Structure formats: C-alpha cells, structure tokens
Image 1 (tube, rainbow, N blue to C red):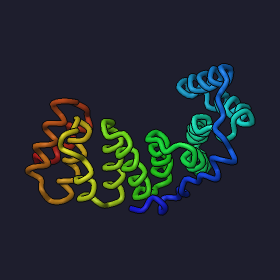
Image 2: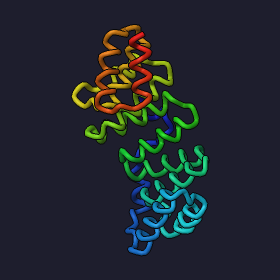
Image 3: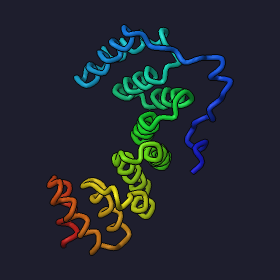
Image 4: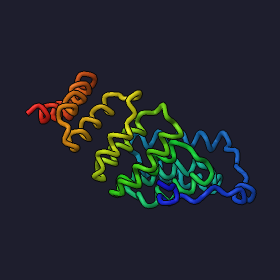
Length: 203
C-alpha cells in the first residue's frame, strides 16, 4: 500500500531547513518522564496538562509530539492523536510513531489503514514481533484473513502470532492446521482466549 493513502505527507528538506531540530533541555526531558509516569498511573488529565505546557518549548520535537499523542489517546481523542503522530512522522520516520498511529486508527475502526501503519513499523523494526501481530490482528478485523496469515513471518512466531495464525487459518477453512497452531500457542501461553480457540477448533 502507498503510504500516502494513510495520511502521511512526504518528508520535506525545506521543512527541516526552516525548522531545525531542537535539543530538549534536561528540565523538559524530566517533565516528559513525569508525564509518562502519570499516564502509566492513569492520571491522564494531569499528564495532558504537563504535555500541553511543554508544547511551546519544543513544538516540533517528535518525542514530545509522540507524548502529546499518547495523552490524547488516553483521553479518547484519537483524531487529535493521529494528527500529532502525522506531524511527528514528518520529523522522524520511527517505528514507534507508526505503531502509535496504527493504534489510534484501530481504535476508530479504520483497520486496513491501521494494518498499513503496523506493517511500516514492522519494516523499520523487524525484530519487534508485536508490530507484525498488530498488523495481522487489524487485517483479521478488516476481513482479510489471507493477508493476516501472510503478514506473520514463520521465523518470528511467538504465542500471540501463532494464535493469530490459527484464527486466520480457521477463517480460511483450514481447521486442521489452525488447530495445530492453536495448541502450540496454548502450550506457550495458556490463556483463556487460547483455550477457547483450541476448544472451538477441536469440536
């Protein structure tokens, strides 16, 4: 898929010339870390207030825009989060930014676009299997089980990836192989979800 179709504008050398990257001060970095702590503790309003106050100090810094996007998502403002991720991506083509944008798109039910973001994140960070899994999960929700199956590389299958492959194979009508993957996932990570899938495929 063309990355333009998921809302990202091409990187511009003119933008970089007009807005050179700013170095974040120790104080800003400390306050950003504090904001992350508030997010982890569920204090979303407090986190957003600090992030918004930091904005004038480094309006174009991708890490700060990422933080503000995460604050927006924690408050359910997914459209604002997408806008912030897109602005950050103009400054830094980073896997975490693509993954964050994918998460926001998925929350809005835009599963095919979300999958494209996770696939881009996977291309940038191929050792992180969560990007592959998030792409596959989004493709399943988009009604594309074959694409979901193909997106999970055999060499990087963990329990979640095998679970998703089992779902994709089941939807494709290959229940026997699906059951094999489901049992493998269940043995590695015996969750209630994995048990339900294995049981449904065994019946």
